[in-house]
Length: 417
Ligand SMILES: [Mg+2]
Image: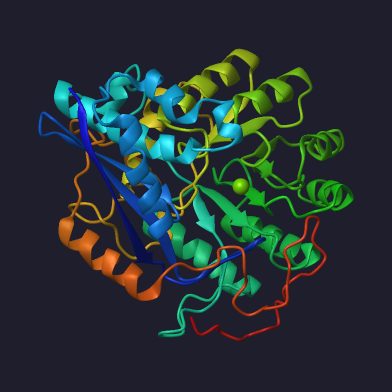
């Protein structure tokens, strides 16, 4: 089989409300690039990458000169062809490789009439549990709904998600407001949802590495009585994580400073992070994540699944990954429940008791909904991109690390975006 064409279409899909984070904001929608890899046997595979626009559509077009005629089964060869580690010093194509790997695995699954999880070694579980991913949110400027700013709003939002989707793990994305206020929010959340072993619920906090080491230690010690899954990226850097880890009694997790095998090796030789959040995009594909999970298994590190803001194609890759690794010991993260729609046939994946079933169809087990693809490609053409690392209401703000320029929880304004 040979690759005959590569197509890329950038779309933007609305979120319930703008999601605030330590580096800025998702301005009420996600921008993603959908990749289609075509073959001489008439089989097309699907991939997805974050961000987009003319530049990423052009990047995928440029990959045709590398991959036309390439056999999609030669996945390792493709890795070196377009993301050789030393060539990557000039041209880092890790995320591009990931989208193309998803598509090639999708092609192979369709060709062999097996789900991707079978290509990866067979499934150990049929559904993957997810955490509720709680963000501080601006109100939706169209109808004023969805704001999460006060403690009451946060607790009500968490209870609503638990009721709707059945989540038993709860992740709060912090790093927006002053740590004292976010501590109050996190403790109230744990208290209201239930933090004892009997409730079965557990919690995780992720300020996207904007605390100073001393703040991280203070915060970590202040939440020791909560049933924490882990404290995620409280600080930036392996050494700062190691210093924090010496003084807090809970696992530390990262999706920031261990995102490749070199960093994983350094973290094993002198451990700074206990739990590695694998991301099928950041690591360069599902197979790279399976390899990394194997290294974590050998060295007794925990594994969780990171979300970089996915539509259904990438979510499918996370489900197939979750299905095949024996050491996924935590609920996976997904922004997915924040989305209003998806570009796959049949509409959005459904949650049942906080989990999503692994697709059983051949390949990734999903199909593109062409009407939705066209609709959201059109919306992207109309709206363009947005600056992920800017806050629409704080024009002069720079997201420093560590940060001492917090947003004000008393500020009730809604950005017009
Ligand atoms: Mg994180």
